[in-house]
Length: 438
Ligand code: ASP
Image (cartoon, rainbow, N blue to C red; front, top):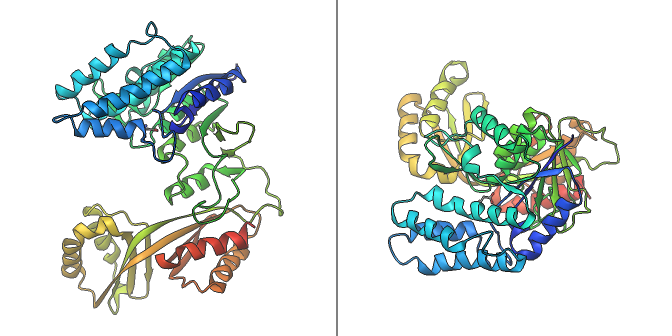
């Protein structure tokens, strides 16, 4: 029998109205048998996510934390009241006493943060009448905080066997001795993907508050279109470059089994959303030339030059080792005759600049060094509806027409990666959207 796994983000479960929408979505399709949820998100723009309140609570643990604890408790009590879940199903005194006890007796930060999802899913399970499965029993972490994929698969498969419908909290799991660990922020997406993988879901539905992945940042482009379909690779590229929809680690577990991801809107469940899958439907020449645009700001480039360098083997190895040892990730590396340019995050580079540059000078003795700040990387993911060579021409023309200084541009499969000055970033995004989507 086919199974769907549905993951609901914080805004989809922020209050009783939202949780009722979730219940209606689940009720409308019998094959949605397993659901994963986040902690309650913001109810309005000036509201605070429960996870952020929990991190605050942890910071206050040695001082006066009462107001924060009361505020968190109130959110759940109100939610339970509005949903008609009474004390027989959930004893809030007991739950919050346990949290407070842990907090004052040295409970760790991940444990405190995880209580948002834990309580939320207990409450939702009681409301729906579904089985609650604690993520601490099924999502396995190593002592150093890495996900243990094989052990997680095994524990999840065992726990879900014979369970008709279950609610599983996102974001956390535990080590073999029961110590709670969390994924990084937004990690409930990863939990959803792990559940989808283990039950070989027909689809992993990721319910959020937008109707799929937008083709560009809505703060820059007015009402951008959403992407209908894209490949896992294109999604990973857009996510890495800053399109914030899905946690980047949520892609691999489902991709390995070829399970499609469908990103949907809880507030507009009739919208088809975005489909992410291996096999792409044939693209038509009527489709926009690109899938989407995303970019990251805050880059620094280091350019080194030395006559005759190009003939000397080993320069790149030395350079990469120095940067790697300083924990710098290279998002771009270009070489030319007698020169190297690498781009690194300005924030990551600042604290290690002195030592890195010292080592470069000693080991490589470059003739000149240029360091440039204020750069951005802009990624354009092709839809395949135009030959890539034509797309390269269109991208360059669109940017040239609005006076963008292209510092570098190269194509990596279906991705064009362009380095520009951050001051020109928004102009560049608008120009490309207009030329390639509109
Ligand atoms: N509640 C966690 C966060 O705010 C995890 C999640 O929502 O996926 O990051």
